[in-house]
Length: 168
Image (cartoon, rainbow, N blue to C red; front, side, top):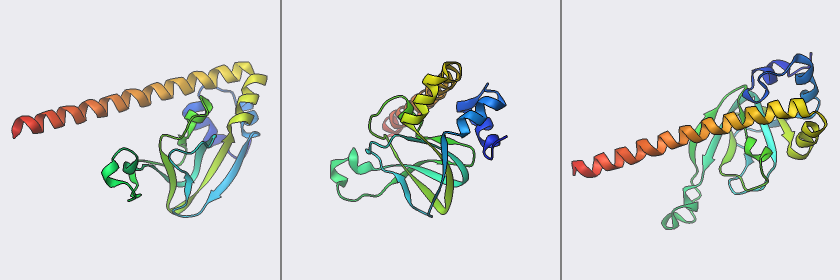
């Protein structure tokens, strides 16, 4: 069993994979350490890596300047999520090579991550189609859940703003 087996086994991306399959996936990963408060990737960048947090916390950020011209130049990031050990982020990079929809940085204590490069990961899935199918199915389920959650937050926001308008 590999050094990171338990982290991979608990990741939603690798549900229903055998120990041997998870050990194969571990072989295509790289451990990296990120300094406290350091950006892992910027919103709008074309990075193609996927990460699992081994140690520490990661903040997912967006830059309001990108959607509000009146704030241009302020570069004040807003945290939209905090992720912990065992959680995965950047997984949209497995689907496309588009720009990052948010940024990511380590918390004040730094982080140790397991990194997967898109090209190597997809090559692995091509060579191992049974494993690749399971991973891509899990990826689609995870993205679907995130879309549903975002839709609920949008609805709540719209209901709250409508209610606030009615109360005035």
